[in-house]
Amino acid sequence: MKLNQAYSRKIFVFVPLLAVLFAALGVWGAGAILSLPAARKIENLPGGFAVEPVAFASQSGATLRGWFIPGQPGAGIVILMHGYRGDRSQMAGRVPFLVQAGYGVLLFDFQAHGESAGKQITLGYLESLDAQAAVAFIKERYPAEKVGVVGLSLGGAAAVLATPPLPIDALILEMVYPDIHRATANRLARYMGNWARPFTPLLTWQLKPRLGIDENALRPIARVSVLPVPKLFIAGEKDRHTPLNESAELFAAAQAPKEFWVVPGAPHGDAHQVMASEYEQRVLAFLAKHLRRLRR
Image 1 (tube, helix red, strand yellow):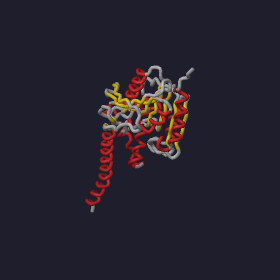
Image 2: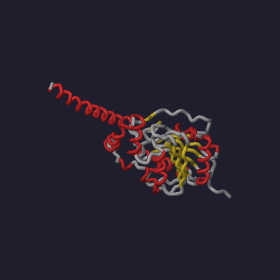
Image 3: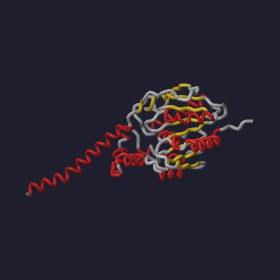
Image 4: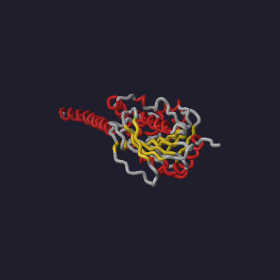
């Protein structure tokens, strides 16, 4: 009887420990998967636009590949920056209304995404160097044009994290995480349940051994306050990756001039697909205010 009780006590202790061990191993494996490259072949841009294939070097070590569609002189140029594990085609739906309004448009793949080289996705760290490279590429070719950036999720984080700040004239940030700790916790809860939130440090701790970066390097909320560029923040009402309160906090931390738009019913992802007409009206109004050059 005593032997059975002792055995039961061991099982009672061992089983929870084993469950925790397996969960920890699962989170470690998830860290490996999250940083894997998202390389893929990109189809041609639909719509019959006069697209110039482009390639330019980044200090991230990658040669970045993309498309450029020229616009009307003096209208300005818009750089579209895609989200995590996406590619330039993720932003292709915005091209028609931007081109129709006269803007030149650059779409490109971040390092370790699409057709650009790269060994690991770094959640905004190396991608911020790619954002700098994209702006520098446009500035070199069109020094007289004003430049705007539309950054979706990872793309927005990369634009904000760029150091020194990007030399641009307008910045649109869609559903951007305030810091990597909360971004990680939200995604664990989204896909595994709230019980997984305590495992967040096991994922963020991996940033150093896997990617060679510190958690503090991935805090857009600490960088957005120093950006003088006019900003339009776009948040999803039903976003579970970057909840509305976190988007509002990021907006509150930013210096003026700034605007904030909540897309009703929108989850994390492409706000343009959810409310195309209003999205286009708001984005075009914001860009016209800050990119158009006055003509005699």
